[in-house]
Amino acid sequence: MKFQATLFISAFLACSIFAQTDSVKAEIIKDFHKMGSNYYAYPTPEAKYTKVPAGYKPFYLSHYGRHGSRFHQPADHYHELYNTLAKADSAGKLTELGKNLLERAKYLDEYAAPRAGDLTQVGVAQHQGIAKRMVKNFPEVFKNDAYIEAYASTSVRCVVSMAAFLEELRAQKPKLDIHQESGKYLMNFISPLDFGKIIGESNTPAWQKENEKLYSHVDPTRMMRAIFNDTNYIKKKVNAGDLYSKIYEIGNSLQGSPEIEFNFDDLWTAEDMFERWRAQNAWWYSVLGNNPFAKKQGLENARPLLKNFLEVADKVIAADTAKADKTTAKNAPKKTSATLRFGHDTVIFPFAVLLQLENGSQNTGIETADMENLHKVWRDYEISPMAANVQFIFYKSSKKGTPILVKVMLNEIEQKLPVTCDSTTVKNCPAAPYYRWEDVRAFYGK
Image (cartoon, rainbow, N blue to C red; front, side, top):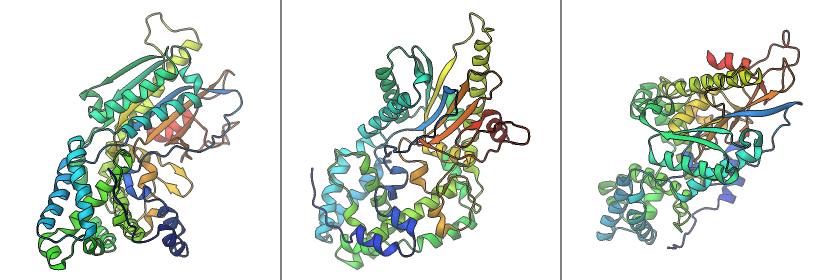
């Protein structure tokens, strides 16, 4: 089903204008998909990896991944978009663009609404791609009949994401011994808190003031006038702000469903899209980031996950050491080569914040009161696109007396950690992105 789209402004022209004042903004608006916030479809990484220290090889991988691209939810949003436009059409209040949008909304109401929240085929492919690259990048972890543990949130889209990931692992390495499960008891570290409660506790008076400042730049007037032909009808019958947000969220979700052969990009100017995204980016920061205006309750949603990463790694390392010392009992549990967890953006956002990851200008753990320039140092689409993931890769050397090393990646990109090695007491401190596990364990254990 195809629709003709007419752009109101050239993103290329806008880029040349904004480049004079904000180079980060200019870079962001080159791609409308990025301004889709947490709906940004996972980009295939092109990063090159730093050479592993001499004598070291990976032996264990610990992972947490968000589900892949999904249909927008709830279904009511599709219904409300369609019903608002249908009523206006019955009253003769739609422009030609509005009528075209009505056709799109009708299709989505029939096709997407029944699938609200479900994983798309793009979401399946995202996890298959990550799994394939994981085997390619760390073959030592997945050799022969290596034992893999996989756990998923009780959400269906997370279970299907895990299934897609494991299907690809088996395709690459048929002999792998894989344990997989999903259950309520696992939620205590995969997704422990009520997100609605987190939102409520984050909405402090101080944040409300900052939010109002950001939304003062978000103006739906131009778009509403492009859709409806009567300004009085807009004032009396249309909740412009709410409709604007639904168009933003539903439209951005479409990048995860290429079988839907249209988008909403023609409704936006680059400037309008940027300002709406900037407000969305700050909202995620207020709820799940290190925001000084909020209570930071969202960070509590990831502390159990961090604890799980640390404790499971300690057990794996202890088991590996025992095996190396030939002290493993015959009936001892299998040594785990990889721990895979599949969950949600509401956990991976605060997890990345707790880890205080740094790559280029992005600093996930930064605390700043400057919401006007937040986009220069904290960008939601880089932290939690669809299928976002954090990987801890552990390395060991056959040489006795050498420390276990670990590297952390966010979305398959190496990260700098706020972890230090005391060079006055340690003979050979590794260089980033490699860190001694005992230093990492001590820092995050606090």
